[in-house]
Image 1 (cartoon, rainbow, N blue to C red):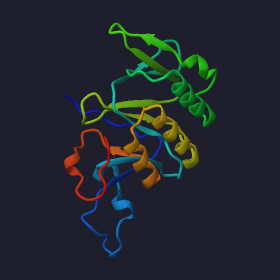
Image 2: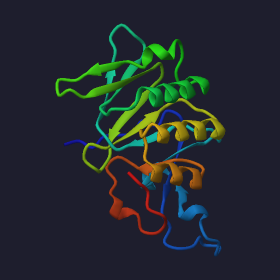
Image 3: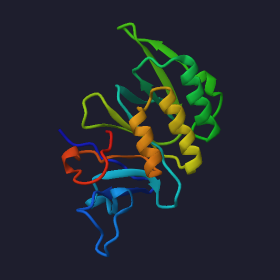
Image 4: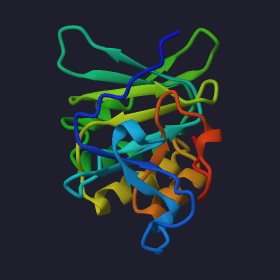
Length: 198
């Protein structure tokens, strides 16, 4: 099986964990060292220009479907998300420019054969959904840049809707960016520093 590859079209930054201290004796900020993509274990939401391209670590099944005759894709969240929380999530995404148009029409629900519900989010820019090392967990990369302040709002509402878990939210706030393992990397490669929820 081929490992999924991350297409870094927005200039995301890459990190590894240090062996202790930097050569000049100063401890690495947040216990991570910024490195080239080839040397990296982690990818961050922080981009080279200081903006953020959101990364969401979702702990449930999801899929991305390219819609024919449309310029965008749909993300199907295979989880029951209360309608009011999903609508709040969409309102924030609209407010920071991650969705456009009548976002209330995007808050659709589809009844699945097993009786479950699927929340649908349509976007008009590149997205990537890459499986995590944990079965049925995914990393959702939104390839559109926003400010840190806007990203904090996205993280808060995503956590409130249980799209991301509290640990991932807190780690993202602490590090002033979200970080996840690169595709094909293993948790065992994290030697020093805080655990990253993937």
